[in-house]
Image (cartoon, rainbow, N blue to C red; front, side, top):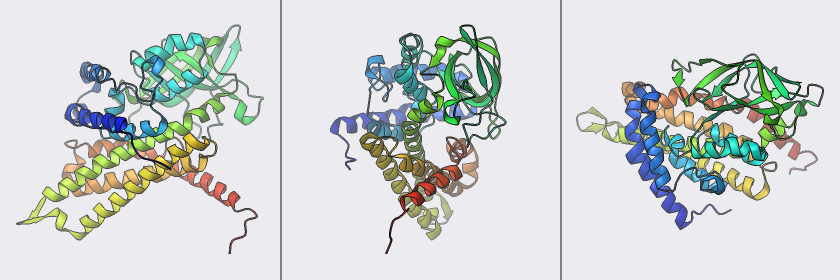
Length: 401
């Protein structure tokens, strides 16, 4: 396995690191204390700068204006961008648009691509992904109440969704719905494009997450679909293949998430070490002199390095042996990296003391918003059970001495 970085990628990563440090991190104090809608003109200005630097949409198809980096290359980019909560959005590779772009590119019709894919990659519009339901467990996604029933040339959609991230201001949603209730459990659902101005698409609210509802891109919405009528031509891929399409999106998406989390770890770690070195706790004595702080620094450094190598290995597996053969590695990184991130953020916040609880640093934001990493895309416990079952199966008939 070769994780070496080409000279070209080193240059790209250097440019991204410098941009994040000089252009994005200085925006964070205002981002943390004011509505993000106030900053939209500034965000657009930064996006234009990224396009001029030819660093826009690093993981998206070149034919639509992206850089078309491979999975391993984009993993490294995602790590760099993860140092700021603004990074992925400003560079045009943010979720859920990134996953929706992959779906449209792979499964969209020519008409769907012309209408949605080009503008989405270019950043002219945004989208959302509507799957999680209020009353049913996200850990068992085949359980779904939202339906799409054929009526003439249309689908009529009814159901309730929540955690439809970034629905506020989105042009369209990709909605997971039951279209074939009599089929096998993994062939019942389909993905359908629903423009957000369609009658019956009701954004009920932006859900407060630990006290912050957010707005525009930085939000999670509850959506009520009430007799929401769209043409059957809005179906993505074959009918009943919603979960098949979701699996295609899942593996690369986990790499993006996990390397973003490594970027967050790096930022929190840097802040922790700097605070320990600078914080005076007695005359001529700094916090870094405490052995417990030194132990935290060593443990976090080791945890971050181990988690990072696990993610790069999973990306290598996906590219070289395929998503199906890399299922164990994909599940492993999901719960390992999420827990490492939570530990590093918590340690850094603790080292900062009362300052860490405020929005004078980025740590409280990360503490609020990244706790969900152990829940979304499958709770930790689900991934652990899945990995354990796979490992146990590998040992069937195996003689161990």
